[in-house]
Length: 53
Ligand SMILES: [Zn+2]
Image 1 (cartoon, rainbow, N blue to C red):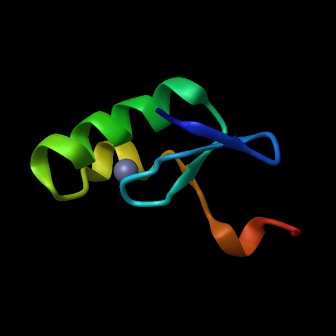
Image 2: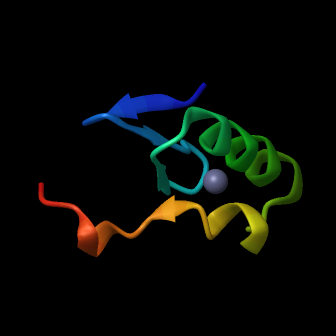
């Protein structure tokens, strides 16, 4: 399951953050099945350096 963190959605497989839940879910499904990253999905991830934690 994707986890919501500070208003963002976390892929628990690769720990990328997404603003939209559906991308986090796609990422998690992909990561779990393929054990690799899909650029078409990860390009939607939030850049961690843009976050103010
Ligand atoms: Zn992922």
